[in-house]
Length: 162
Length: 99
Image (cartoon, rainbow over all chains, first blue to last red; front, side, top):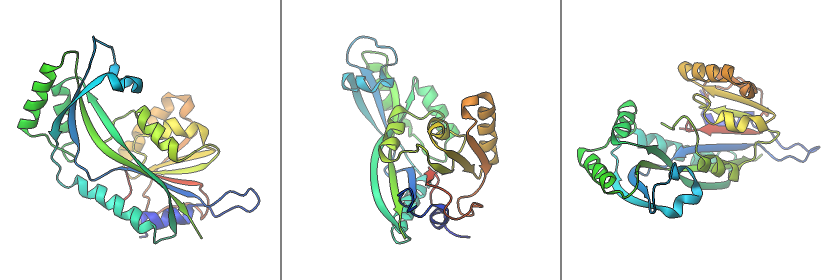
């Protein structure tokens, strides 16, 4: 069986001299191998409905770092994805652009968060100490808090070349 | 592990790197179609593959519920053995699936 990168290269188009369109693009999105961390967010001012859902509100949000989640083997999958992209540079692709962003998961309660982790235990776990710190930070919030799990994610575009 | 609905930040970041308008796109590891639905309407063709039959079934249910999602063609498939002709796609989009 061929690698996914080699197969992608095969099905991507070559340049079209008529339309002038260049070679096809391989685009990938996956989390980095940086461990996921937990924060508690609350608004700096009075109660604001759905404040975390509006990016313009970010400056008005107080973010309290709580700590890191624990991972077993899931980070190895993300390392493998990064390695596959690096290898693609030797397999007929050139780097067009790459950027990272924080993928955020929002939870209203600690129970909601722990239920989510139970459903996805192969990816990450939270220690009792981390959960206690999160609960404390949520209690200390001056407005309705959100529990936020943050996972660094990378998006990369590679251009096929002849 | 991604949530069912992509965030504005995620969509904006992807759009900052790639334009899908008028393109023939092969999405590999599409899951339940989370990232197919927002981008597919602007593409010329959008084929979403996932090796997990349950995920594709969930995507089919979602597609049947919403006519705007008709453009997405869903199939069970592995990115390492593609049954498409050479040079067919403008974009191969790996969504949390490359390894």
